[in-house]
Image (cartoon, rainbow, N blue to C red; front, side, top):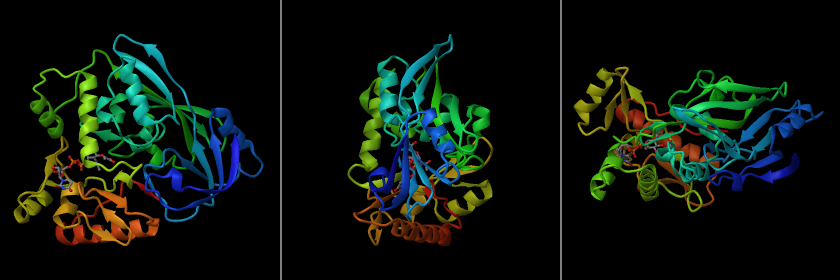
Length: 338
Ligand code: EPU
């Protein structure tokens, strides 16, 4: 366990927002987490868990003890008839882990390539892209309870996954720290296609039966073409969740805006594309202060250089108000605003 004080968190959040941690502890193992829990001062203090910092908007300094998760390691835990079970430390970089599983011959995560962040943050958010959600490839995970120091293993049901949601954003927020995650990669492997942009790529290439490596490459190309690289432009991916509306609400919107992008869901509700709604309100490429809306994808807010968290929040509120004013829909942020 390594204790640091007065740490700038700017390098540790992909939005590159300024914030100071009073105390930051790097935790590389379950034993490190227990050492924090048993520590006479740190043990009693509130905790703030930091993964890859790709899903937070920092608007202030952090007085809680920042636990920077750096648990490493990845291994094949088990080969079953119907799946490979692969385990990774919560501090591993997500994209590197996906690339490694493919290189080892254990496909299944290729649609989730190039999502910024760490392995431990993936279940918190129930990350998803191009037709696959993490919960569909999830086996179990280990957490350390931040009060008792006990290790607890959680199954898929216990994680209560939802759209970009889990128990770690609700009941267990700040209470338990994910140390290791196990993935269930089904055998035999089957490509997940059907997502419009992937279909387009496939049609262009003329490839009938793409393998997992091919899908991985297409997903990386699509993401690189329309999402900013956080190493160059600060951002936290999609800033708003795609909203769900009733059929009647959707009909009402179509009546006024026939081109609204909408997807009927199995439960009868309709998912709308938040990016389209924001774009329709004229926000693409606009700025408020040093925070802006990305030119190629209106769902992504960016730091144009030196922005504060407050500026990002001001821009987000202005967008929410204009989308509400025109469509009567309240957009919900996807990242956690701190
Ligand atoms: N659109 C516009 N204008 C825009 C942006 C989008 O008209 O400025 C339209 C697009 O043309 C498309 C529709 O809106 O018809 C949906 O856009 P897109 O396919 O790009 O996907 P998304 O709904 O914006 C979601 C996830 C992404 C994920 C992609 C691909 C959410 C909030 N976002 O985006 O996840 O990569 O699908 O599966 O669910 C993330 O969560 O950080 C993220 C990037």
